[in-house]
Length: 336
Ligand code: DAH
Image (cartoon, rainbow, N blue to C red; front, side, top):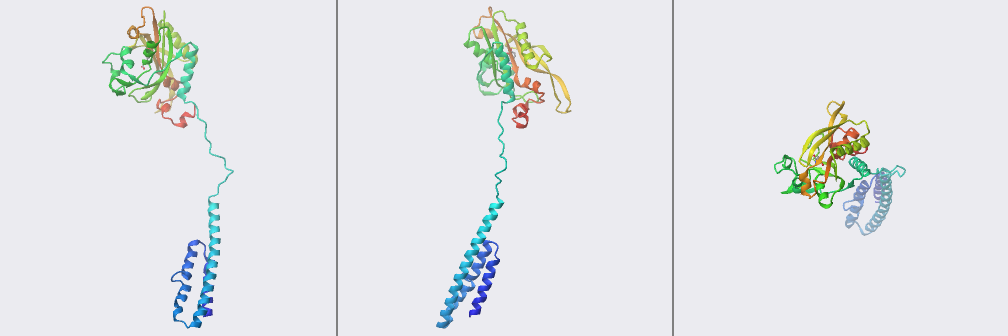
């Protein structure tokens, strides 16, 4: 009897000592102390033994049970400590590593250019005015002397919010808003977003313009040309090549478009190429426009222009496609 207990004891202790994780340790516990375990079975067989034997077996079995429980607990603590240590080591945090940098933001290239243009015109005495992006057809077209059947009014070109209300296609409606509020003389520049149903390398459905309007006595086309040339020379330098072309706008007469020479990498061949890029429309304010805002067109004259801020950004930075400016790809924007 005594040997049988010792055999079980030695065998159990050896198995406990050999365990390497908590799961196999629990298997050993079940094999000896579980419901069908070896020690449990001995106790269960007590009924068939004689009273003296019963006492001895009972005592031995309980002592063994106690001893095994203690060993299991000790082993469990050791294994738990080991597992914790391994976990901590594998999740090791190196507090000497440098942190992840949070780069500071900066002004978007379009706003940089817009600020620079505003500065140049402010120095010439122009005030800054603004108007709404969602505009009525009246301000965007009618008041600007645009006929009802003008193609620009078509939904192929203009985003309609609802009948009579559009996303402004130009900053020109702010001319009307300013003249309605202010008697002449006026000199304003109007930066703002404009919207058109259009998309290619030089057109984006949303882009940024800057409108200019100057009304006073004896204003001529020479004043317009002189002002624009002064601006272009200040912004691009004296070497910039400029071309004035006659054009038509319903709200100016005569009207012109201005192109400058633009050099950028060709998107298909990769070569540097120069071509004329239209950057603004301009002209002398049409008498019909003055009538709308009750300006005395006999005594006053004025000029107006609408400048593509993104277009001059493309020329300044040799950007090959307007969409780069609005894609918000940081790899592009961080260069400015
Ligand atoms: N609004 C015109 C456009 O977006 C540009 C323009 C042309 C504005 C002539 C003007 C102007 O003020 O006088 O195409």
